[in-house]
Length: 145
Image (cartoon, rainbow, N blue to C red):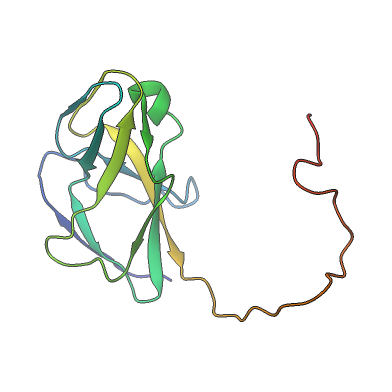
């Protein structure tokens, strides 16, 4: 996939998205409003954008590696999936956050990141009585390093 992706910004207060080719495949997303959270609280943090993804593609949204250290929040669904059908004029992206300590997220703070991925290819499942590969020893078999 190459080309142009249409993005609607819901605020002028966040930096525009930019793709740094070669340095990282992930693109930072920013909080679009100031959010105060108490430990144990859940909030949807607006990211200030809507996007028209190409047909056959989806966005995978995850926290940045420093998000928990800097803000004490985790993403409640581990990874967000935004498919190409979520592309309307009011389909703003959000970060579902759960706070493990009291925190304040400011406008324009980089709290998560995304990358655009092609949909999984179509395939069929086939039930068998036995797999022909060598066993690795089962769950947790690699031990401690």
